[in-house]
Length: 253
Ligand SMILES: [Zn+2]
Ligand SMILES: [Zn+2]
Image (cartoon, rainbow, N blue to C red):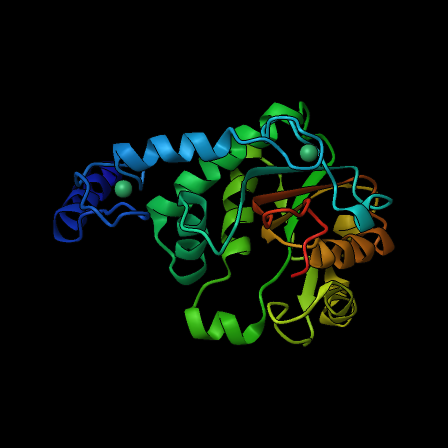
C-alpha cells in the first residue's frame, strides 16, 4: 500500500518536474531512471572505456594508485578519466552531483560505481566505507556533500557500514594550489573523528572521493585512516583528472 502511494507520488512529481539529461539538458521521459538522453548515454559509455594514461589498461581494469599514496592505499578504482576544462559527460555528472541532490542522478552514479567496485572486490567481509568530506563552507553554500551521499548509497548496496571517519578542520580550497601546496594543505584540512576509531580499527576501508586530481586529499585521508588502525584501504572515485601531456597523479592542479 505504502509502495503504491509512493509510486503514484513519484509519478506525479515526474510529471511536474520531468527529468532532464545532465549533459545536454534535453527533457527526458518522466519515467526515465537514467539521467542521460540516448546520445549522451553513448558518449558516457565511450568515456568509461577510455585508456588509463599511466598503466595503459582500460579504465575499468585499472587499479593505479596516486604515486604518493602507494604505501597507504592498496588499490584505486575509478569510473572515468576526464579533463575538467573540456566538456564531457563525466564533467557534467560531477558538477551536477556537486551542486544538487537529485535522487535519480545520485542513484545512477551509485549504480555505475557499484558495478566498478564489484568488478574489483569480490568480498566485503570486514569492510566499511568512508568518504573525503567536503568543506563546511561548500556544504552550506550548496546544501550538498556529494561524497557522503554517494558513500551512503553504496553502503546500502554492499550491505556494509558507512562511517564518517574524517572531519574537515579548515584548509583552503585545493583548486588554486599546486601539487606540493595541495599536499601541505590537505594535511591541515582533515582530522580523525574520535567517535569512529573503534569502527575503523582492523577494518578494510573503501575511501570514496568524487574527483581525484593529484591524490593529495586521498593521501592525507588514507594517512588518517591508517593512524586509526585501518587494515587495507581501497580508494574509489567517480572521475580522475588528467590534463593533456600529463599522467594521472602528476598533473599540476
Ligand atoms: Zn543528452
Ligand atoms: Zn591505470
